[in-house]
Length: 73
Image (cartoon, rainbow, N blue to C red; front, side):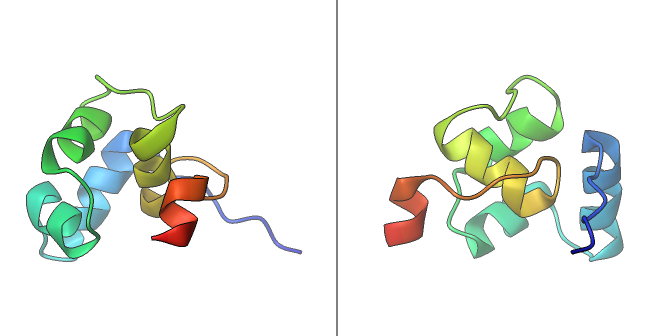
């Protein structure tokens, strides 16, 4: 199985810009808190636990599965 290349935070910001999306628009479209997405992209949140982890996985910043709360939502 081929591993997906992870993005850096800067690459994630560039990807959003290439898609024509702001971090806030992406957050709303994916039902994530805008502030947490912005903090993760600015490296103020590490993305180790909970919603920040789910956002990091969704943006391709880290490997992993969504948390139990996100799986059932």
